[in-house]
Length: 481
Image (cartoon, rainbow, N blue to C red):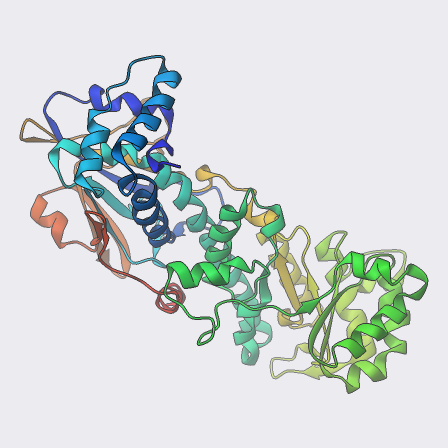
């Protein structure tokens, strides 16, 4: 599709609506609020994907490298019938003649955590006749970038929580946290691109992921090589169809067959197809010798019920249910007491829970395990679409707003500040400079052009070319720091 069609319909008339002699429009992309308790900064991520995939590849392949008459005729067909007018496409023809996007994007490095209300990047036209293009691109930029920023931020919050509890209950095993949050979201996301963008955001904080195309995407867009560095990884794992095919009457036989099929490594087996508690108290004791003699770990995966109660136990008439998965595994397989005094399961056995995990439930699981004397690292959490799909652009109030224009050679500082709003939608004013203040990124507006050039924002893309190219390992280091 011609990427100029990837826009909100109301953008089509804005070229004529700006004041006569407008030659420049300068805008910024900013998270304006947080709807997630305890999160007051947002991870910047996804710009390089947008630039490579859309501003370069798709604009070249589907617009600039196509015959002008064909792309302009197609564009005019849709716009004419959409608006019911004879649309003037001369500006589209001029853009095609130019052969590249006359736009400059200046941004902070990806993987940087930015406080709420601080801009992440700016966008401005580089040729006066294409002033209309700056905010024409708003829809496409917003459509692509809000989700990787949002998922990367949420993943970082999980990482903070899991690291906190690992430090308190299993300090020597904190490195395991990179595997403790596992991306299970792909099947529940709104589309394949949504899965990939969100999954890439998750992978900035965690190595565990079942969203396989993320590995290819990082090679395509963030200069990584899966043969030389760990991008994402997972383990052999069953699903309910496998367990059902083996029959309910011989579920233990299915376990035996799987243990023989995979004599080494980590094997995750979904264990609540019928009766989780029977698996834990009847089947596993009978298979104990095979499990302990195996060169690897068997991971038990519950997949239904309240995750906090299932993993940690709860008040219940049934004493087995009251203990929960981790305590039952401890009673059967034992383990060690670490130097902080917390129980850590025998490395031959473990657990993962991957249904309806939220930040709050992850915190509760870690806290209740700690209260029971267990290290938080005894369980892996599958983070799915219940976490990553239940978000919108408004989760962090992302918006791209123009703050400076030039009309007839004169600069104008512009802003919005609706009297009916609570202040969230109040924009910056004029040109912007980002800078460090006691280690915190902040900004000031209404700066001079000289000051704008001296800030933390660096030119990433200009006139159809990617100027600064980032890579996954550096982004991860930046975020971890």
